[in-house]
Image (cartoon, rainbow, N blue to C red):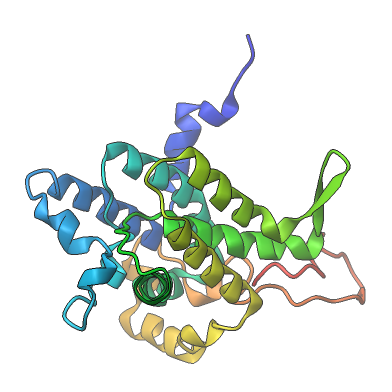
Length: 260
């Protein structure tokens, strides 16, 4: 019989146990809010992003809407899609950067753009919630990085730019999955492209501040599964490209730009 190592329960358990801290925290909050919304259904209305209700007293919706889900299937599909992307992001940029971005601009920016488009361009009031906005944000960032080393992929006689993959998925999802927001997913993808291009890197706290906080609070020693500024997989913004080969053995990854 054929074997399916990717479905091995032991490997799945090992993968879950190795998830970094912020990834665990975000996933747990998503699950906790879904459970809490069963006896307290008003939580969905409180957290959902509804353009018509947005004013300065409702700004919490911009941060809360990616964490709330409509039902169990909505939650499960988003968690399955988000987990590997978020885990990779945190392993590359560190726990503090991930926490700062996903509790701040990675929610407020796509959410704010969505509200402005819905209210003043499309004159609509589509209500959205769910972590799929983060899924397409991270997919766009990954696709932009992949595009630098693999600019195209082929479908028959056609060559498709790699960076367009998330946009194709947005369109396919909009056609196949009912009650999804095309505009909301495009807003998330747009912020992902901006992040990968470097235009919004100023949103990340300065590395000296991050190191001071880590050292002052001894976060690496106190928090299990914490990813520090100095222990990220590829460095803060990736390995700089290089065409020269120095003496001694060379890692196969040297010379490739791995960060955004």
